[in-house]
Image (tube, rainbow, N blue to C red; front, side, top):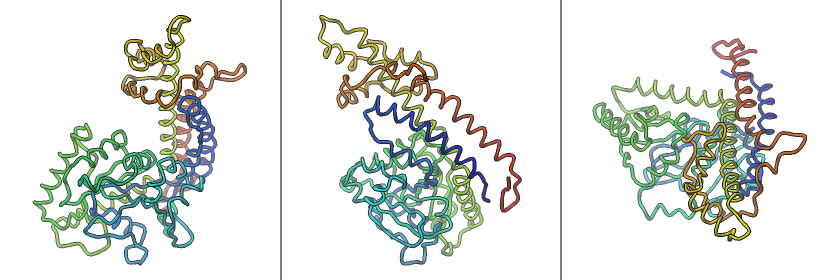
Length: 414
């Protein structure tokens, strides 16, 4: 089913780019960031991210979905760890494999901000373009398998930071396991920690389910369920889909019909990620704007407290040091919580700002009141208005337009 939301998407894009400009002005002023390449991520296609232990079938699943299974261009698969690189699969006029440096060099691709993660990582990043009906609507990211061997975990680049970059931007995350690889070690625990807060787009796949009997499979399902629930700090983890996700004939199993239904459910989730891409973009931008606004208010509060405490007779550097290292003593958190729209549940440990202010000198910043033109709204007010008014209004407009469409089995017409 293809929804005709393209005219509205242009409206979303225009509003979103305006919001992003406000957000990046705040970033430049309050986070010492000077690049706005992330604005090019807004019109990018939905991103489907594959994560999981090595040899659980992540690459096989991608091969199956995009039609690479029986071709020489298929992603390499095997019983040993085979994917040591990050692969981005996207649509192109013909099959082409290229280096990560090319992928990040073109800002229009939406991956330019990956360059800040270092050359060592870019050497482990590869792009693949190919013709595929599915890739016309989404892009896939295949990740290196999670490894619990300490020596093999030394990848030479910030793996967790890279993974976090993709998790934040993914529309759907498939965390893939198989019945023989359920060990929850340190690296998987770190990955699950990064996934916290993204539960809505996370799906668990118990792959190769036809390789064990029904009774054994139920035991494996229960073990996976209860081992992940405590790590995710939830009563129960996201939905677990069981099956064997490839086109080859499944092994004889009394649950074959269940596996086929589970596969349909996964494909439906994939379809929903495509269909809801505009809503997901709005949510991503709104979340990003909220975090930037929160950061700006925290930095501004540190500056306000310093201005109140400094004197002609005291050492300014000593005063600043004490405020940054003892924010509780100076009421920094309490002041931030008094700001409109700030919850104590969203406020992270302000102790992390010790490191932030070590990297960014106090003299670099000016109070937010400095960025209030006489004949225009303050920059912070523009971002706040986008969070509380403009973006929610845009989302309501989108839902109204979708609900007014007349849908049949195969298409939707306005």
